[in-house]
Image 1 (cartoon, helix red, strand yellow):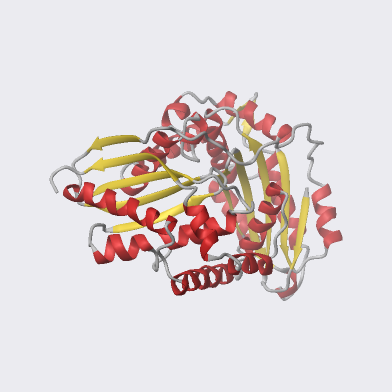
Image 2: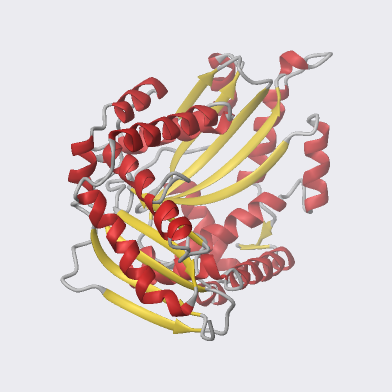
Length: 411
């Protein structure tokens, strides 16, 4: 599926080729991450990272990379290339054609032989990914958030990080990953986005040169939904740290762009999603119970996560005060001035992101995934329409489900 986003706002052209799949096995997370790393750094024509970089430099310093992300039950592997627009070259040439030729090489001609990825390249990238996953454990804020995810979710895929687990990575072979790569090429949903001062006919001509076959599978369910637990699950882990971590997970049954979505966005911002939030003002600043305190709402998994860094001795007091902030919002204990300031803050942040070329591409991708189209003007209008009562109603939907406490011990 091709999506051209004509714009003269930027001096660059950005091309994104996305592979999307509804995951059925946790191991796919780490396989797709490893695959992204291998395809980003080598191909038959460019067998080393240096060769890849040299080819990019010939395209006037174009930048290229792969990313992996997850939206609910759908995993997305992106190939992203950004280059200067032909119109800004002293002697214009078919740079867009060069870009698509490069992407075709990287995606369809990987460094592989005899049904397996090149062993040296595979082992190097496998080692790099193992080191990256292990390094996350040293960032205790990220570690606590991932541990809370394991406690909250019942589904093994949702429990794991976007990049997968070391345990699953250990068993992956070069031949197994290559077989998975061929399956991805054949079956994944494909979305191609081109943003810039481009002619749609020219883009279509280049896209038709990519050897994608017809897709036989479709994404049937985007959002993940989990039943409500009758009891809160709490897990405590002890480590010797300078700072303890207290993280909470609330089920918030509203999905991306549904009737309650915009009220949920405002509720999250009021709770802990902005410097003007209740968690920041009351838990961190007023009571000095937290080094940091924030919340994040994931509409694709219907979960609201609260993260705090605290002293061990303050655990019970902080836990009570954090929960009180949710209770207060559910009881309508916030002023119209607070509400309007939060909405203004959200809109200002949203508008500032419109200056990023990737924002329009991401928005277009979410339009397709959610099957609901939304312009920036509509988003701003819907945020402005959120009332005091709307926030109260959404706050009353939030149910505490899981707590993870990383006990730092001596403080």
